[in-house]
Length: 188
Image: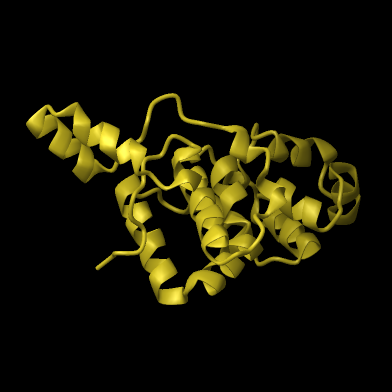
């Protein structure tokens, strides 16, 4: 997140070091994930947040958010789309840059699922896809990621056709990452 905030402000590590009076090595270590930002002193976090024009909570909170199960994450995203509407959801996700936040945390399932949702909603609404994520679109999970309910049906029935049909009917924007998703609109 720090690198993304720096990019948005057009700040190099050197320049951020000079503005904040934080040693370059500290900023470098945070950016290279040698030092966890949530372990930094309050003074360091305060200086960074002031220079980057974000709250201290926003700067550190992104690193402290607990990770939920992937199934709960998918459900929450689908509910947010339903509640916010496609366009509002897209705007919120793109402005927050949470796709990269998850990616930088190495939460690849969440990052790619959210990107798949962004691309799907963009296509559904005739909006060009955001080119900023092109490098992420090159990634793909080695094995398909199936919904837990679908995989349970497969295990109970031992019928591989269940998985093949799901793959055949998967939404292309999710399938690009080898995430098998067939329904994002019909949430209760």
